[in-house]
Image (tube, rainbow, N blue to C red):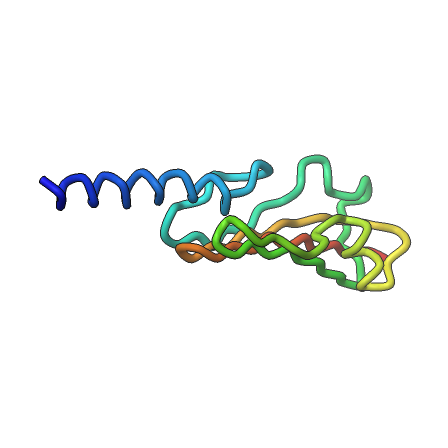
Length: 108
């Protein structure tokens, strides 16, 4: 009986922690392994061209308790020396208790 209770506790905690390592923007994250890339809504330039410069910014989450970094579009543009943004893409990666969210921009 103790084994069933322990299994139920582990499963419950795993489901609870999954919400902490997932993102609210973009596609759903898996509880074990996720590696997805997707475009930002309304992120394509009017002329449809991709910029020559690229900038990336990343935020990281560990165990659902520690999160740090700046994955904003502004930080990505600053990291790439971009003043005129053409496209914005996101990448979300997770592996059990570690997750990262990156924003990549292109522009001039």
